[in-house]
Each structure stands twice: as structure tokens, then as C-alpha cells.
Image (cartoon, rainbow, N blue to C red; front, side, top):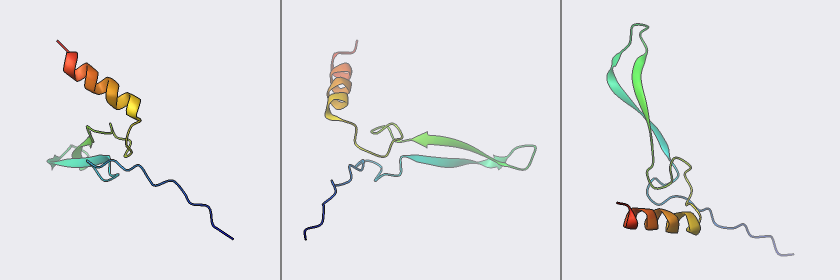
Length: 67
């Protein structure tokens, strides 16, 4: 009996699915905790997956015709 096949994962090629990262500033605050900032992948906006084609087309049109 054949097994159902799942659709391939749509992982973002820019970040390989690791869409967010925490970067240390190098110092510590007054409580002794490290000071960090969180960054997100610009391509997928922190989702880790490829956005639908329609969103990509709208983003490209906005970038092309922005003044």
C-alpha cells in the first residue's frame, strides 16, 4: 500500500529556516544579564519559510516603483 507523500518544506534559502538570531553586544546591564538584540531574516521577515508568490511580487513592485 503506497504511503502518502508530504509536500516539500518551503524553507527560506537566505536563512535556511533559522529566521531569528540573538546577538550579544558584549557588555552586561546592572543586573548582570547580557545585553542582546534580536535580528530577523530580511527575506522571510522572521518566519523561516518562503513567502507566497503574491507577496513576493507585491514586494518587488513596491521596491521597483517606490519614490
